[in-house]
Image (cartoon, rainbow, N blue to C red; front, top):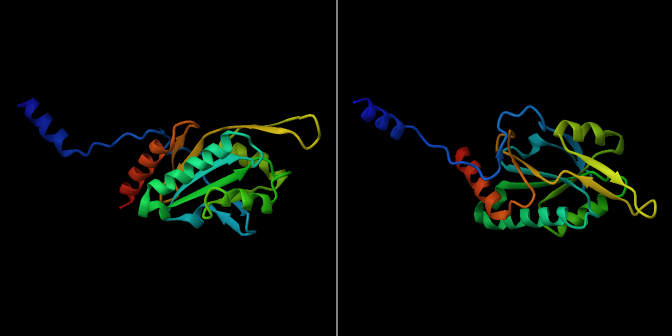
Length: 189
């Protein structure tokens, strides 16, 4: 009888589908920002209510990780089909010295014209990256302007209510992220 009751009640409970990304629901970091986008408009996380937001920290002169991550995010948007308009890609530069608004705008347009690049003021970058638990470090090059930036290589995913839900690692691929975003969109319905 106990086994029958257990089977009955477990059949009645909804099984949550696991995410491919790391579920960080309830985290008390990466809770928001106030940054200027590449069009000169001040943006906050709350501006994107009703959309799934994916935030990636990087820089435009990054040779591999950044363009790959942004390219995959553009693939995800296409894979979502009609739900693609419910995805907002945000790129936050860790190199505000070189990444001007004009450069950031061109960079975003190369991936998806609806994606936005956000530029912190150089003196605010440390506080912002600490609040997101993002690592970055300037690595000197042969000249003063040929430096590179070491940085964290994952993305944060927020649900339609602006709550941090997932951290997706670099290299997870667009299929896994698209699946996770579809799960979050189903939750919101």
